[in-house]
Length: 305
Image (tube, rainbow, N blue to C red; front, side, top):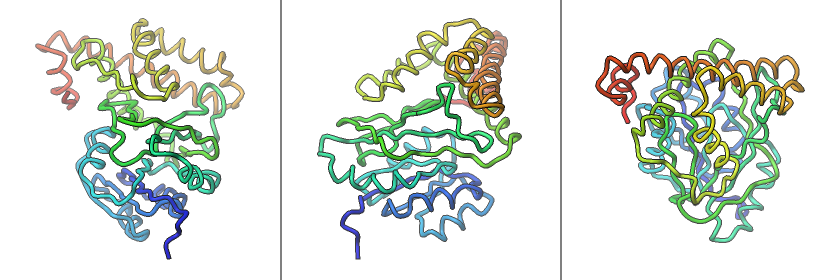
């Protein structure tokens, strides 16, 4: 018998070789959602068999980036849910969110199109409580057809196309990747290339101005995006990662998270940002031998705008 109090939610999970995480993710949401859609990028490990064991619907599509893949999913995949929950495979939701979310959705009126969740980030198995890492407020639950994904190579957000959003105060989305540090650094090397592409796209105005947050209610995301594009992007290469580390580790008390907090802010707040800057510098050097920034991005980095 169907639980009349259970919200009608379809969870969409993007995967590629996520056998370490997928079962944990699905276990956390299975009593909350009516349908699970796994959008896979041709995994070669046990990801698909795990998804099948939970009765998930599986579709496969070549991966370009997160934004394109999730937008493809909501545009092309048939889902039954009134609401869509966006999950990364290495994320899960806590018990408080599962307990209280149905009550929230039962109370919202038709003018509410999205729900913002608070996310906790773990690094080396420790919650990064300080340094501005918590809370990250993200739009992750939305009425079907009422949101879209910014088409960016990095730091893309879901944005409401109609209606308003509400912040869910009880419970959390947990970002806790179980891979080792070698995997983490390799992944962030790839992220740095995408971040460089976004910064060069902004600098050379390769795409029309993207003000996706103009009508959205995510004030935290609006502020971060403004600071990044209006201030951070205009600072000298090399200086900005130093200032960013000082801001996070000292001014935002990142040191209170101990050694693992130092490692997190040194690697994610400084090393990663410095790597982006060096890739930006390398891009400018290579640009001298190309007719346009777009041609360079496509030829050297495989990034088509």
